[in-house]
Length: 394
Ligand SMILES: *Cc1c(COP(=O)(O)O)cnc(C)c1O
Image (tube, rainbow, N blue to C red; front, side, top):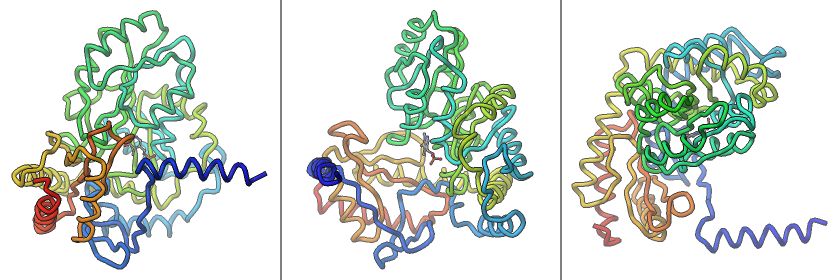
């Protein structure tokens, strides 16, 4: 039976390759960090979500090792059977208090947090208003839910208002958005969204995966950046980016929402508890970001420096202040060639093209980290300049 199915898969895969969309994995033979080893060469990494440089930070490694010694390796259980340790609950309290929310619950990923959210809380009597560029996990979460879905144009508050009117007869309305969108590094207008939500009796859900821990004046994310900390009803986020980068996600909200999710959210109920190693390390991550580490400031300085200097070289970037810096190249081919040439020069970046970004808007997405030294950035800028001239981009 496999033979016709195999043929079918081969055809599909060839179509993906022909469209230039096939994703190759380039294995690292080193820990994640500023300097990584790829195919036997040491190169500078400019595309990790390692915003605070905590992925292989010595304090995090020690906390993880101590967690392994004190609480073991695996839980071999979901949370409600015998998979909840004291440290799981401690981490949930720490996350909630950091975000100034009532309560938080852990998932093994933010993807799970999002897919387990909507269908648990809403049904066919309700409506979900979703930004058209929302992350795949929000989209999937909404698909699993029977509520009516209304898409609004990306960050367009007039369109959102129209959709809110359209959803006027629903029992409950919830607006769902990324806090920061990963392809452009643009920040959702969370304050305006909260104002509209007030006016039209809607709840607000923000997925802050690209913001939690480093964005906003004290790293509390897009709500803090927009001046509405504590006003968002539901925040989901990941431990897999700035907060250590290993794995795990969470939902933070009101007490009753958290209690209901613990009772009914399917990925929470039917998937294994987060390993103690990760929980212990994540507690240390919170100690670091709530302390005077200076990492956030460092990240913002690096971001401002890189944005200024890459523009000065003649490249076009998406304006903004987020450490995601999209260097716009328009053609897919050019993005691929540029990334390959930069790797030859010792700089690891990835080109993004359709369908990840709109046609004709191919780009290299640079991501800054607090762990980058100024000398690293100068090296990278020099290589961008060199390759940019060779490829006649600047
Ligand atoms: C990365 C990301 C996720 C997925 O997080 P995981 O914890 O890796 O599952 C979800 N939402 C957004 C907006 C993201 O950027």
